[in-house]
Image (tube, rainbow, N blue to C red; front, side, top):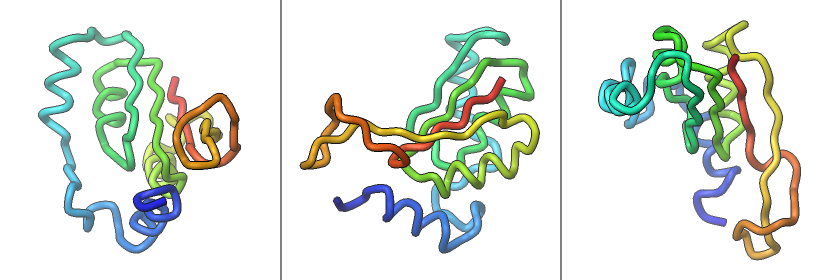
Length: 117
């Protein structure tokens, strides 16, 4: 599947986080949107997070619990390493059909989740 898990693991494995074209040290637009709709202490889920630093900023401002989801375990490993003890768990599962579209069948390890308390 083009743009699938292996592709994104390769992307995150080939360069440092700040060498990616979409890197933002401070994701200001995303952070402003969250601030506009949630209050510190509110739960938040970032779907397709990659190694975004949005979770860092949200933790710094007291949001949480937080969940960070991405297809790439390599991307989440970058976030988990950066967050250190603030990243409490890492596990994976994704529901996939044989053709690659979401269904009720679970295939472990395809999507990783990093829950932050």
